[in-house]
Amino acid sequence: MIPGKETESRIETALLEYPRPQSALLAVLHLIQAERGYIADEDIEYAAKRVDVPVAHVAGVVSFYTMFRRQPPGRHHLQVCRTLSCQLRGCREIINHLRKRLGIAEGGVTSDGRFSLVTVECLGSCDTAPMMQVNDDYHEGLTIERLDALLDSMK
Amino acid sequence: MTDGRSQTLLLKNLHRSDSATLEAYLQGGGYRALPRALKEMTPEQVVEEVKASGLRGRGGAGFPTGMKWGFMPKGPGPKYLVLNADESEPGTFKDRLLLERDPHLVLEGFLIGCYAVGCHHGFIYIRGEFVRPYQILLQAVQEARAAGYVGKNLLGSGYDLEITIYRGAGAYICGEETALLESLEGKLGHPRLKPPFPAQVGLYGKPTSVNNVETIANVPMIVEMGANWYGNIGRPKNTGPKLFCLSGHVRKPGVYELPLGIPLRELIYQHAGGMLREDRPLKAVVPGGSSVPVLRADQIDVLMDFDSLAAAGTLLGSAGVIVMDDSVCMVDALLNLARFYAHESCGQCTPCREGTGWYVQILERLERGEGKKSDLDLLLDLSDRIQGNTICPLGDAVAMPVRSYVTQFREEFEEHVAAKGCPLAAAAAPGRA
Image 1 (cartoon, rainbow over the protein chains, first blue to last red):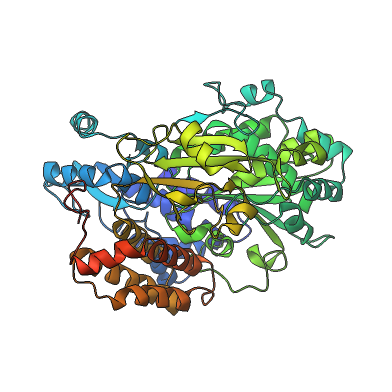
Image 2: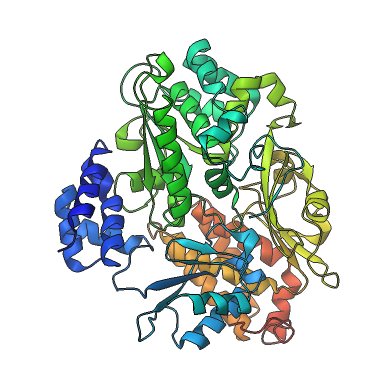
């Protein structure tokens, strides 16, 4: 059952932080996604009830913000920055290499569920370009060699 | 992350590996300004001091911070100060450095700001992708609370202040202050029409002031050292230290702290180590984040401050300096940015929603070799129709760079039409699409 007890208690805390419950909506969705890995239909209904807004409003919010996913990602969710500074320092090679090595395009998940690949807009790490975020962590100053070593280390 | 510390007021604690801890911040002289503000100054005096310092907002617009605070109504009733930590302007990575490496400096400035505007519940809106900075900041708030800097009766002054950290979820537009407030209310990040301005009708309909992370990090030194001292740094009307973010084709990309008014040439060739490859000379520089007009290599003898860059036809913006060498195709570079703005347009206003998509289509066909000569004027015409005709500055933020790339590098755009494709594509890095 999602949300589980721990997520539920963190949702309780989040609701208390704001003068209006609706302000906790993004926090509720972040917490649910942290537990399930994505936002399912039933989560949208649950969140709507929790912060007292229409289901359609939550569906709109989920689709507006790029971090909320409607499909399960791989265990390692690779988010490669594609914006100008990273492009100048070779993100295209990084993205092409990932496509080839993983056999998936952007938006895809490997059949073993190990990796998913997306490109994202500027992550504010332009001085260490090219870079990507894997789940919560930044991996900076990527080269093909470093990338391969990193992927090998991710089970 | 690299950082150049040729002058260090904002980055002075960063030499320590434990710079994010309360202990390190205190040993570096931190949390001296907050007690001074609370015990020796009225809120109005803090506002006046910041006004006198000449501090201008570091988020992009360069609006005087003290004046912004001065717009907040006096008297009782809920009022809010919101810290904009939603850094997402392409080419900008200074706020993340402060949040990760010196969160207490940011926090102390924010606490003083809350006191100055009479806010008892401050919100920090941090970019959703910044998971580690969020955790570091959360830890800093806990430390500050335990030390009596946050909570009831701050340092025995009788002033109560609660702080809530709010995580965004991936939307560039939420860096725009009214979109940020909508997002904070649990809604889509759709910018609001102004007026009314947030100082009258802001968060939850109450008077609200929104400040950038770097801006707020300047406040403790102003309170501690005084407006006169601060006003001597930089140039007239462009005072204070500034964090410059260097990226692209330079040898030493990174954040460099220097006084406002440093020459752009010096920033690139001295501080950032010059061009990355000796056989690849400078072609273009974006001086203030992707939303500002681009400069050609022969235009870099300009001072890096708000007024000097405005006089040169561009903007300091967020001081995200993106350096491009002569391997770069300007059509390709602009297409990258057009895709960014098309993705990030919130969709409220027709000129921005449709216009950004048009930009992408036109630039894609120029790159494919299917561009027409009339496409160049169409790009310029689109910019005229977008700029000034949208609720928020995102429209301007794409119209300005498009206009500048096309006018500053017109020959290169024309070559794409004449040569039916990109003349640089053969020589360019593999993987161009």
